[in-house]
Length: 190
Image (cartoon, rainbow, N blue to C red; front, side):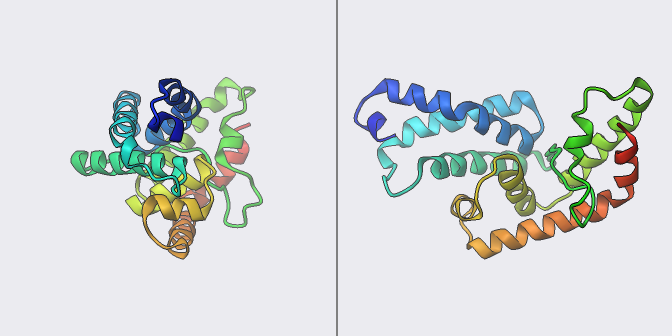
């Protein structure tokens, strides 16, 4: 980013190449629409260009970028009054010993007679994530989908790290409770 601030246009192209896909995936999971995600991604990088002069070296670029993306998602969600946040990384059981639904649903060897159950599981998971509060959903997506550390999530969201950990814990508890009845079905799908 510092090179781009100094006028190196190629440096911005490299930033775009490096961060486009993960930021797009984050936005897509937050808003649930590919078209909307593409629009918000474009807006995020336009804001990076417009705000380049204000970028400060002590801030990690990814933290700054995800803050921009997150704010765009939150603004969009407020305008739309409903959100979808599909993710397949929710735990199957409270103990965490059953893997994730992603493990089950990603299997290409699922017989055709079990695809209906897989589709139902996917719909239940998407609905459960959509019912999380905005604060819990964004923390869940940043941690589970992007793999961001709690400290960086705290910087993006603008709250203390312990608050982020608390939101994550409550999100996981809600997902476990909502999806607990489907754990046996998920195990039966493959």
